[in-house]
Image (tube, rainbow, N blue to C red):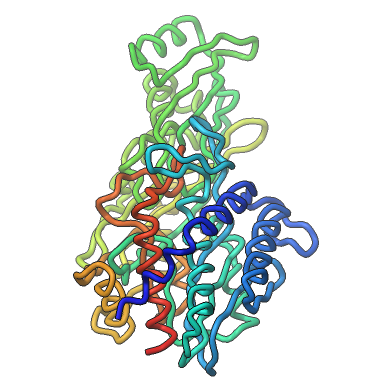
Length: 457
């Protein structure tokens, strides 16, 4: 039986509520009392829980860390994990990032793809189950997190207060079934000698995205200034402006998610490499000199001895996501996605070894351990059946460098949807984030079928 089609009558309500949710700029900000991820994240969570209540569903807010909506009866839970926080909009949008705008079958807006669209679909899947009067073996629960984009403790805090499910999935990746997620290691590089020529260097908004812009102000001679401009040549990605503080150099790149840094162009790395061709180590300072020698524009960690790969999950990737130098600050943030058979401790030790000769400290700020759920498990078979009921063929299983809530299920779940692998890479943390509406509602059918199967089988 194909139950997934029951979601299609709710198209208009889904798009209406998605518009409301996208309009909330729910970027995680400084905690305030009762709102651990800031006011806008809490507002987005409260908004979607209010929507659920209006649909007649049971809801709960766990301290504005996360909340849930539930349908069905039974002593067990099956979960769908979504999030309502988003990354910053960034520059270069052709539409207002916090308004849904439809053009040529695409719906633009920050969060449409990651992850508000999937969250609203999962909510209406509960509504479809309720309206159809489906009798369940277990309760189906949709969880909405408030701090996923900052690798926070939102779901940890939720599950400390609420029961763990027997299984679950997160629609925050792509189809088929992601049963392997690389480890995620985030490192801060700090300290060393301050630069003598670079007044400031700034790049990146979040560590888990390839920086699309970078800027430096350099105090240099006329000869050095001319050399920098000459080396830039006709590359329109660079701009030069003479200011009272020095030569201001801007660089533009292409944003991408840190799980696939090869899909972007790192503006910080571009600017570093330009400066390193003219300025010496003292003029650059310890941190920028290290980055220009040991990171460069590579994304495989080869220059610090980190290059590695395994059969289940593929190669290690390294993203230089943040650089802040100037006014007493010297810091760079790295986001490393490592194979499921590797160990974060080993990677940290190698990076510390590489940093030591430059007088830099390397500290681990966050780590998410790898996920690996065998393909022959009962739950993988269930999801394969759900997908096949809608699509007519079984999905493949695959590995990702992305980090999803599936890790929080501790071997009970995977990432599943909402995107299809042949869709253009216009999603996730990119400028002009959007969804293909025809594919979006195909996902909605698969999602409902999977939720129906989890609740009844």
